[in-house]
Length: 371
Ligand code: AGP
Image (cartoon, rainbow, N blue to C red; front, side, top):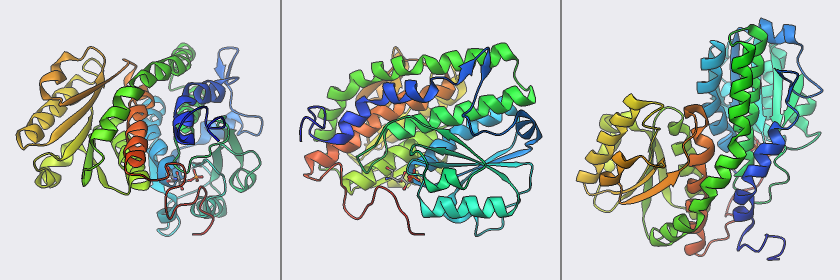
């Protein structure tokens, strides 16, 4: 009923709006006495100190949260992090031993590909930490430790609030590793955690774009395809934006690393093709920002319709943006938490305008329990 959907046309919009709460609940209780604390069933500090390599394994949206995490965990810990699709991982003989930490991310905790990856990692003696939104599910049961996301039940088949919660949980793991290994001073860990704690308010602010983005979604509903471009942590955001559009609007959508444009995808640009560009902050990553600006001017010159997600007050993008969507300024590594919000809304609204069931897209199940 409409009441269950919080007065919305579809659950997904309610779940998009629940993201500040999902983030706050996921972070709650994980910082005490100046330290990051993971969950009850956890790895000992010694185990975390011994880690010399991290694998993140997951599927779909959870995989995209892992791609985001790679940037943060490598930066904070100086450990190599590989993020891999669970369905590929165990079939290619990955190099694992007891000092490898495998982070298995799954909303449902029942995804067969991810479960098999966990089993394979444990057979190779790696330590497995599950990040899961479902209490007592199979993946946490078969893992050495678990960190729960507390996003609450997610009804929409398309993952939204669990994506943001997974990013936050991954970041807690990164900070716990940095703390155990001493690659960050305790006051730096505390500062990073405070920045994370400020994110529910920033996401709330980003939700101020919903009406604007819904109107844009209605305008774009007849498009044949949409491209998404990003760099650094904006690249996985672009991949996630494209996945949402494929699964909900059944539209051809592709995410690219913007730097790859000139290596092939620019050939796809044609008149009126909508291209969504996820801009980095002009302050945080100035070099990347200027490179993306030149990418947008190139695609605009070829007739693309540019939809630019940029930091509030970034005036430099204005001449290149046919549609400008402004999100609050946050530290670079946290940008995916705000820039993903308009992309979720865009996909949902394009799907609704095309007459599709946003909460139950065709051919998809909420949890995929076959390999
Ligand atoms: C997300 O919108 C998808 N429905 C799908 O990609 C999903 O993220 C994937 O199947 C993984 O599910 P899990 O998190 O429950 O393991």
